[in-house]
Image (cartoon, rainbow, N blue to C red; front, side, top):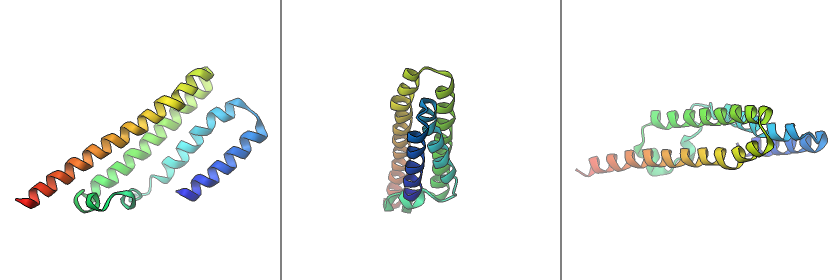
Length: 129
């Protein structure tokens, strides 16, 4: 993921400098989001990023489902950005990239944390009895 991110940043940054096209700059987040979504379609990509206590207590199917949910979120953000970049004003696009996309990701992190934490607490409470 890290090497892919570096390669995307270098290639797309260079392309933006070469083209000097504002629409291309606005479409770049879509390319990044869709590339990340494709990488997140690997079945167990998320498991290595989960804390050890969650890895021990959260079922693997839940972690895999969360990984696919992240892939869907990234794809949805990529397609939404593409539509906004092509058909809306720059101010709307800037708001979407700066507020809506970041907010969606933060909301997803909070939701995943709450779900995983609830599962871990229930499992630990069950094992304590």
